[in-house]
Amino acid sequence: MLTLYNTLSRRKEVFVPIEPGRVRMYVCGMTVYDYCHLGHARVLVVFDTIVRWLRASGYQVTYVRNITDIDDKIIQRAQASGEPYTHITQRFIDAMHEDERALNVLPPDHEPRATEYVGRMLDMIQSLIDRGHAYPTETGDVYYAVRSFPSYGRLSGKTLDELIAGERVEPDPHKRDPLDFALWKAAKPGEPAWPSPWGPGRPGWHIECSAMGSHLLGPHFDIHGGGQDLIFPHHENEIAQSEGAHGCTFVNYWLHNGFVRVNEEKMSKSLGNFFTIREVLRLYDAEVVRLFILRAHYRSPLNYSDTQLDEARAALTRLYTALRGTEAAALTIDWASAWPARFKAAMDDDFNTPEALAVLFELASEVNRTRSAPLAAELKALGGVLGLLGREPEAFLQAGGTHADYPPERIEALIAERLEARRKRDYARADAIRAQLKAAGIVLEDGPQGTTWRRL
RNA sequence: GGCGCGAUGGCAGAGUGGUCAUGCAGCGGCCUGCAAAGCCGUGGACGUCGGUUCGAUUCCGGCUCGCGCCUCCA
Image 1 (tube, rainbow, N blue to C red):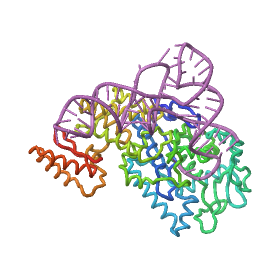
Image 2 (image 1 turned 180 degrees about the horizontal axis):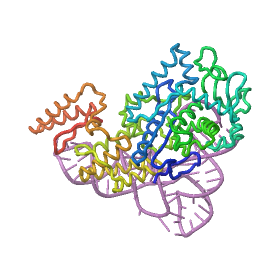
Image 3 (image 1 turned 45 degrees about the vertical axis):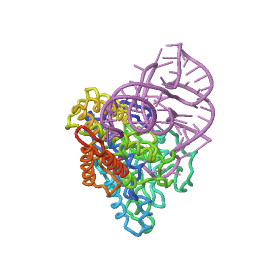
Image 4 (image 1 turned 60 degrees about the vertical axis):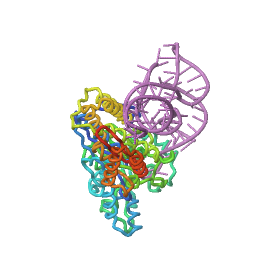
């Protein structure tokens, strides 16, 4: 029985899909005006893992993750560089896909782009006007009237008055209420624009997710996710728009992942304290980064530091070391058997990946003790559910060396030379070779089947 | 100012009303030509002050500290 923490109720709830056996899920993706940073990596990996778990649990999942390819920042970038905005967005979409593949994030079933949905957004805005939830201004903008939606603020746990009390920006004089937000923004000269009944312009940020979500998943679907910073105003506004336009419940379960931090501070574009995924991947194996993310519960803060990444690498090394030399055949997991049952209990408890990983480490110890091929297969299969342990152990253990001086052939040659020295009981020479390789970050390990090597 | 979340051993990080997290690091041992890996054993924790309870790290309240949201942000 899967339970998950619903931001809407602020408690764990038993998951009951709208349609038995099916899950319809939407996650807010990236605004593509720059490279993805580790905060984005966390969203990608966390919701990928959630989808993998839902599928492993037998659900037929439709997973939508959108791309915001038109907004103020994209326009700013285009104006600053003189490049057409579509070139910028395409470049960063490609980069995002590269990052995803590296992190073993499976592609969503649908990846709609905002610019493909402008027509449906216009329909939705008209419908909101017709229903008295929105109003156009003389300047060609259209705003959502938050006072027309009685439960506005429910997701963020605040009342309209509480939200207004903390208002920190100068309200637009054309707004009826300071918290009214733009559904449609009139175009300024030189900006990308689409025709509309209210004049040329572009959609506000929030309306795109309402339009794409309801088109691909229906007006009422199961799960909506994103980073915690989207709770207000983005998701609050999505609810107001979707329920205002369709007159039915929008989403049953709202899931939000915690932030990545640097020195106990939120990693963010505005603070400038971010590391891009590709920067980090130059220093650490992508699977190590994935494990680093899954070592913390998805709702907890995740502090980024070299120490943390180093520990994740050590942890992954332990798992792969247990698999080394085993015949871990592919296997269909029997969720009723002992180890998978423990793993399942952890994952069913609001996707508790740290607990699930603890099960894997205990299983790894058991594999080390018994050298049992079936247990090794179980370890590999359970790791696979988390998108981990998919490689040959040697491929991981020998990957990522920084010493170009020591390609595998040279290492093998030195191992052969050392073997000969050992045969002649020339231990001084044998140890010298080991020391030489160790200085290059390569460890030799003498085992019953001969000498193996790995990189530190 | 309003609202919310958190505080666990050297570090990271789960969890529980009374027996174990787990990983890294430490210590002792086994194995090894020496190592490494692995195995066996082992020390070490629940911010603070009260309350509930036979018993609280776990439930409740105050306090302190940290973080976040109230503006674009995953």
